[in-house]
Image (cartoon, rainbow, N blue to C red; front, side, top):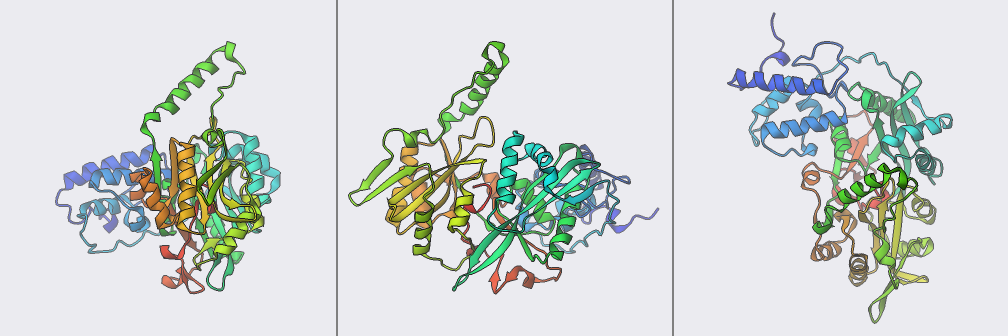
Length: 490
């Protein structure tokens, strides 16, 4: 039998034995992901374009390729749907030296659309409770809290036009992809532009690598195009979601630069806490007993809550958002024309009611005319709640006020684990945080191009023109004023 080109050994191998071993190892690895194969797994079988492997498997594939190639891979720089869509393509990729140019661009495999056992439907409120229970795999382990989050995010959202798509296996929900509405502003004079934000992707474990994600996104794309949508963004995807998105046509508009300070002397505390909780719950005599743990915000409220940073400037700590004063300051500072989320009273009143987050607010100045504010958040979607704190938003009239807010937050909070995005902060504040012991976040995240701004064009036209909106380059990082509070991470 004559081999097709895709089934032939990778070009330039010079060592068929090595290729045979790699091929067998990769084939075995793929089988451990339990993909929904309709035929034998061959060298030319489409892995990514077909949806045969989904986000977690694709992420693990990157780790395997990194191990075999001996180099870190930036997912943003790889067209995975072309370069890694088959075993043969992956072997050709491994053959190339790190800086070696491609001599032949592999043709993408055009897989036949497989008959799917899944039905993808639009969400309606009759399955609200079922969605809340399904999302214990992503949002929180408590269905009641998930129900509040679902209602807050999609029903109480001040902007209209959200969508939720559900994948069903019979009557059971096995997958979900949500698109919640948001409103952005850009340009001078400022104009407002609505964007859908992709979020809430979850496929139940036993249905992964069966094409569920592919079916969800195909149905979503067709529906959103029919509805007149042109672009979708994602600004809170983790490494796994980012990898899958980039492999399925999304583009990155820039890395957001995580920066953090972790105090290593408390590194064992979470493990100790878990052991204590297990001990308490294991004894019938302790039934009903709760381990009372201080929140990471406890030190902020210890003693005074107003601090005089110099004779003319004070900073006050509060657990309530002063919406009108914050909006007034945002308007007084003005807009430099970059893409940023609208922060008006309607939006901020909704935003700070997120049932999966807890916030603290630092204010410089007074209620009549704030000179600055800084917002801290922690997640409360797990039991026990997270001890990590993040700076999710800040505005200030000058560098002196920025420094005062940051120093009070860090020094008075004495946080063991605190993070921020450099994309949220001015260069002055970034330098101030480095002086206080912050450094670039997880090397693995940074090398993989996450966290980042992702853009999905629903325009069927080819070329760079579809990545421009009203004269603005959507993929240019300098065009975005991005803050964590614009995302569900915040």
